[in-house]
Length: 96
Image (tube, rainbow, N blue to C red):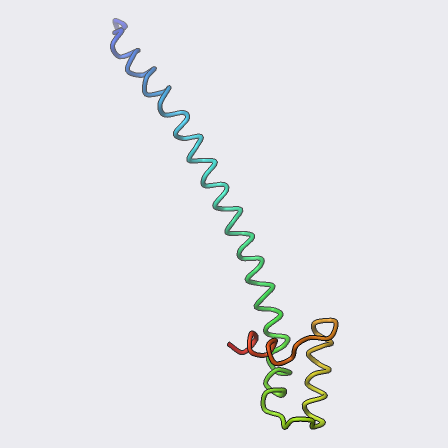
């Protein structure tokens, strides 16, 4: 078996070009994976919050102004969110 210089040079060139390409692709894929995980976590949090607010917001939207049901709904919304909120805008966001 004779060593062929052309084959060695060709292999060296392929290795020199291939390694940075593979490493760059690996970095890109890992970054995309982390972004997807962060997006999933955010989407899960938003979905959970919307689920907790769905019924109180439906009650708020369907209640008469200044009624007992409206005040109870506002209280439930504030309890879920932990403070005073703009009830109308919150419910628009939750119910859209």
